[in-house]
Image (cartoon, rainbow, N blue to C red; front, side, top):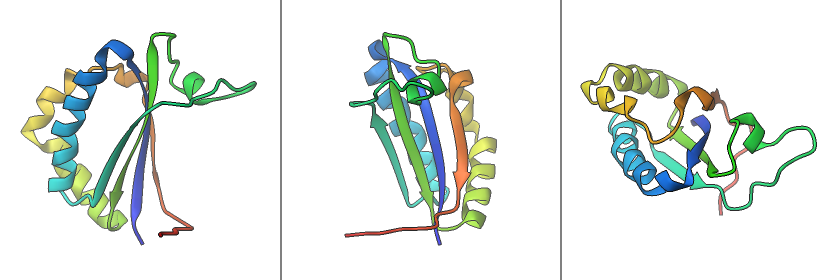
Length: 118
């Protein structure tokens, strides 16, 4: 079964287009290293909760939007090998010029337990 890396970040609204350009550049590298799908989603309906929510999770400011992203891999072994290549790739030097605060990113790897398709 596939393996999913999930990410949530806060991106300044003024950096929407630079973020999209950044994502196009680096998402293509994930695809090159074995990912089968990469999805970047700009927050459209991200309500504030009473105890917790996406905005609090990444300490989003009023002028920031929450971005929810995931990378789908064919399996965990492909993910592990692909991420190792990604982290060692010389193109990663440019990744430090992110249009968001990477210290507030939350992320994790997930093994699907239910998967439905149309």
